[in-house]
Length: 329
Ligand code: UDP
Image (tube, rainbow, N blue to C red):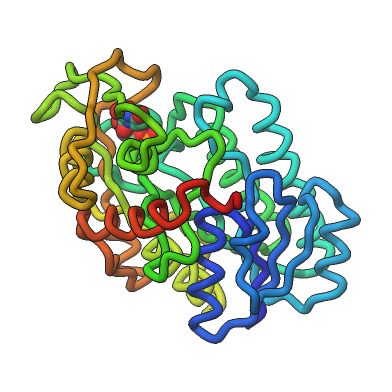
């Protein structure tokens, strides 16, 4: 198979490319390198630098390469930024996907696997969250991802395109080799921020609220290893190649950890006392987000291989401790 990975220089995209190449697939990457890193591009992948909002660019990739399926990671993904600059998210995430779909339809490419998010649900109506549950995003980021899912749905009805949307819970960890990992600027995610304390880049980790209705008062999230997410994309491509219908799947371990538990595990992994301070709640944080991934397990045959939180944090630590400035020299 020849797979086009849009956003293949980003965090989850680069890990998916590594798994695809390990599985013997041919990979073409397109990335505008706005938030992605050229160093994260696998040396065996063919790379095109460009933006999915640029129709001529997208057309040229499809003209040059005989693509069997697309995996789409090319989007902005910071919740906080999406609230202060919502139109940036509509422009890149929605307008970009519109251009992409126009080009796919024109080139008769009819299979796409899409990087979606638990943020499509908003405040959950029950735990664990099922794919059919209410979707009422509480931020622009989640809203644009939900709208992208709908674009695939309606484009599919009109033009025969089939899609799989993968709604990730909390992506974390790094490739076991330590060669690639998470490198966001600014960093907003819990695990890399915690690890900045033993790296002496941060004096303490802030705990955003300890008055939630949870066992220790801090928020509960479902942390899922990036390589397990990557594997789900490969299974989703195979699912579409086998002729199956469009579908939506949650991806998580189905187990929740509190912010305090994550910090405690990071102390164990790093051997550092990691100072923590309680701060006010962060706006828009639901108390608990835990996935039911039964559907992905049953239909895709997906099984997370790195479900242990200590192992997840150990892979993240291997990456961050050897690349304290991310990909920057
Ligand atoms: N969090 C925290 N301190 C931080 C960053 C995050 O307490 O410096 C909490 C946050 O409130 C949430 C959890 O850690 O409950 C995971 O946050 P993250 O931003 O990593 O992912 P999200 O759940 O927002 O997708």
